[in-house]
Length: 205
Image (cartoon, helix red, strand yellow):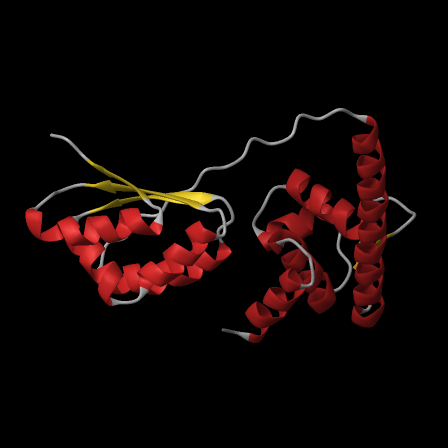
């Protein structure tokens, strides 16, 4: 990256557009210019240069002459940066004022509340199941539904998820389990779920 590129990058980070940064740097390096030669040097259209210069004038970074043809001069860097900073501060104060106005108007309106969002998560592995289930249970308030295969029920029992689930149900939460497969070997685990207070159903083909 050249020094010019680095300088332009910093100007853009300060809030200038790329065109504004190029124009301001060019005026700093090569001195005051009228729009036509400036457009030729920047390889763009005269109308485009006019718009960019107008924006830089509003930011306090370029100063136009009073005679004709108008000559545009870059304000010295420290003064220009201070002016740009004050413009940002002014814009921020204006946004804060508008925010307060909108908040006040919103209190006078009768907006419909947003509908309750329902979310779900697809668990793809045993590791993800174990890492997600316990902290998720601790954050829930009303209940949740699980769609699980037989193996997941076994793992829930082996890795200590069931005690957290049982405590959640004891505190008034509701848990529904939809089985996606079924075998006689899993009957004791299903009974364990039922004894804990979970609603268990098997998916029929």
